[in-house]
Image (tube, rainbow, N blue to C red; front, side, top):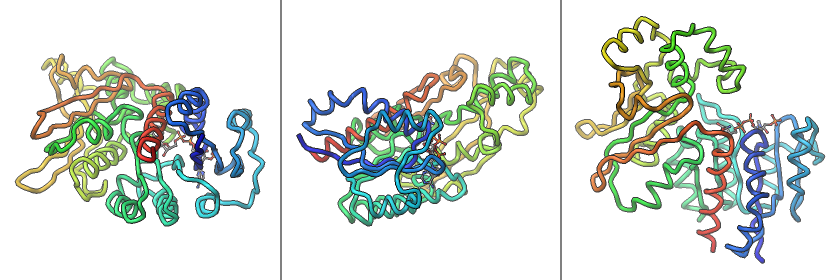
Length: 340
Ligand SMILES: NC(=O)c1ccc[n+]([C@@H]2O[C@H](COP(=O)([O-])OP(=O)(O)OC[C@H]3O[C@@H](n4cnc5c(N)ncnc54)[C@H](OP(=O)(O)O)[C@@H]3O)[C@@H](O)[C@H]2O)c1
């Protein structure tokens, strides 16, 4: 049995859900790849860290953090210390997103590549802000770099294009990518007041305390940028997206759309316009009954148009944290396949 050593940077909702799935699938992975996955390091911000080149007890680590405790590694070790010194083959970057800069996740990934380590990221900041630089660095060091979870959790988007549509030319990418605004627009259409929608969404845990990044379209712009950088070689950053949020949409706008048998959605689109790549995020009116109008609650959709296969659409229906875990797991499988 071989061993693949994995370091988990960030052990929050995504990191722990991934850990649970890994424990569930441990025997299946060993049988299929003749490889044991050893978690050799875990780094958090306030829950301590843990390092053991021989492999940590993952169940105990999950339990400790979920009980509000601290991992008992050397408290002076920073995330960067772990990236630059711990013994691992693959780094999983699962720290919080900084939508304005992509940092410090970009530096985390660079430091792992500098050691020739493979990287899987759930954090979309690096793909939106530094995809070209990071993928060039990975290639120069012979390192693998996967990022399925960064857009629509475990729904195959990048894997769909890279693994099942080889040698196609993508001409357009579009969709509904931000679940918070989708939910808010739907609740507004149902006649609820804006402040009530926000407080109910916060209580249910899917609207952030500071919802501005979603409402003003930044989150959607970052996701669209990640998609375009990977699928259309856009070489762009989120600030280049022509962006309008939903903050100025009123119940009257929604009623007027309804009178025209339409609904309002926050729509993302990237395409080549006379050779120039354009990217827009804006509220649009779509006819009731169209695919976009059926994307309800916290669901999302992405459509990829290629010269060879026309337009394909994938819908993710109301995801839970398990779908995030699967995105990370599917990238681990890509690493295992590549190393087999
Ligand atoms: N949750 C999802 O469904 C989902 C879906 C797709 C993508 N993602 C992405 O996955 C990433 C993690 O999301 P999450 O929901 O797991 O967030 P989370 O619950 O807030 O967890 C973040 C984790 O990172 C740790 N952390 C914070 N700063 C750090 C640093 N500088 N170095 C090392 N660890 C640090 C936190 O430490 P403490 O434990 O001490 O706070 C925590 O363990 C984000 O980039 C997010 O955008 C999440």
